[in-house]
Length: 338
Image (cartoon, rainbow, N blue to C red; front, side, top):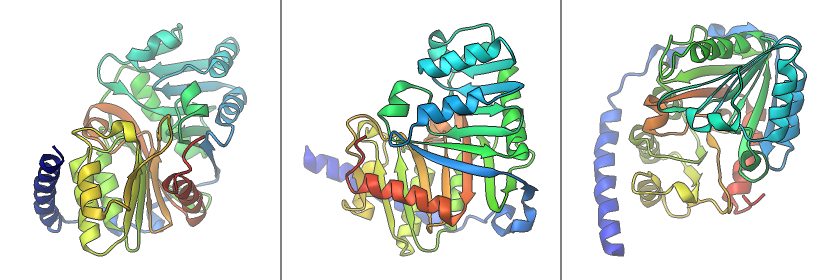
């Protein structure tokens, strides 16, 4: 059985390598040559937390409780009682609107809650007062806040909030799995350049591949589910170019569709490993050259790219990348247990 598995892996690897050669002929998009001057300036700040070692539940509830006029949330799943309580209490005084996935509507079903009807509404973001955004990989659930490895980011910026707010309105109006492309994807929050995209309309997998192709020194990743062939191909190409690549993946998500066997076979068993958290490694993160981070709700999967509602955030900042790097080191070193 082991020999058959290795043979299948080798065949898959060969097909991937052929696809990699094709990638060398891809012409970079205009965004490749974009400079910082193309980013719209916006005063603001970013706050990063990691669950479960940070108190993500309190951070999120405090964030929501600070709203003065509006709360607009697109949340895949909601089972944290504290979050439910804040949303219900706030709904008696200010405008609260929530979009959730239809599979989890029963967890939080009220007059101000709407759900999709097919595919996954997989976002995890809230916009308060049209000024501040929460996003990242964390669902407001007991597991994600206290047992799974996640990230939670709070962004204070009216332009960032406008982007997420416009996406929310599409979802609220029933426009799932599509919508208009983002108007202002590149924003300079204080001194930190951000790129913001929503799937499927902004082609999130293409955005990830483009950033990975820019790598000069290193790529590290920590992913819950990784099945996207095109993104795996870019990693293989960068490996052939001599760029060190290391990753950690959620053990429960390694199936016949996972890119784990191929990536481990090509990059080395010591460089691509399974996580050790008895719960879940729930990050969807790539760290490039120690200065660029890709995060958000988007798993590198075909479903995430084409059939779900997702958001993707690309941050170019050494300090933030360093914090994600520390998280990666903890997980890669076998310390992913809460």
